[in-house]
Image 1 (tube, rainbow, N blue to C red):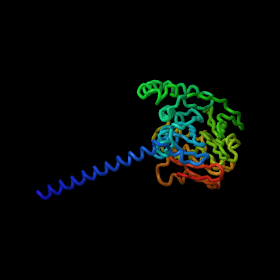
Image 2: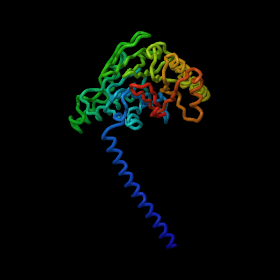
Image 3: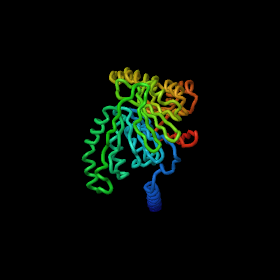
Image 4: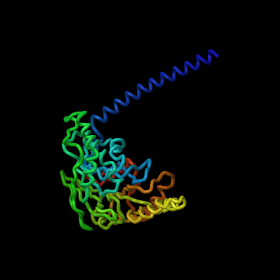
Length: 356
């Protein structure tokens, strides 16, 4: 019996020493990683050009692989965000190591909750990580002022606490919050320049998401490279006209077949509300095969799906989601998930799928 007690004690001692050693290694690794991240971010390592990352590839339904809609565009050393869904700014840091302090502006496609619910945190993270002295510009169609004012009111006390605690030099009170930059909705088939600086031009165009209005997409052009981002829409002729020849088309998609299964399941379960919603959402989103037709009409160099609805948690569902896409578009296709990243270096025609 004593031998078993001694053996058990020895094993416990070895395990404890191993745990201490692992803990020591872990803290050393933690220190090294933190020092590297705080010395700079991965934007410094990117070649000049446009780089597009999905900080949120999903829609309003919960998904382990796809957070709320959020697209990051790096132009030179500047970061621009299109829509601010749940978890977007955290994914920006966690998946790409792109510092939120570099964010120059946010462009909202429309005001559905899943596209704006992370806006307050995004503004706060940008402010404290960059010691900014002016609020974050938020571009959007008519009504953006109401969105911005609401978030500024909600975060007003948080801003007071942070400046009081850390001081004006670290978190200047003049830099807190958001600043609305509204623009008029362009007529169908036309675009409006909403941002232009240092070689980057951003144009907005109307899309079809009725009864939601305004609803727009955006085209980014920088140093000979281009990307168009659809926002939520059905097949849109305005988008097709505005996006001609883009290197990358980032387009929302909703599988009519898979949402039909959701509707049938809701009806079988007696959930009439969800069954009604499943029917309703079909008329203001685009099926993946339809999006492929749009990519062909645009002449896009690559197609990146985002705002993927419904979630695709089971093996085989991604194949069903993409049915008909290859029949309608013969370019490269990426079914986006959080962390998908495509690089468009300036001066060449390369389209590099960096993370898929």
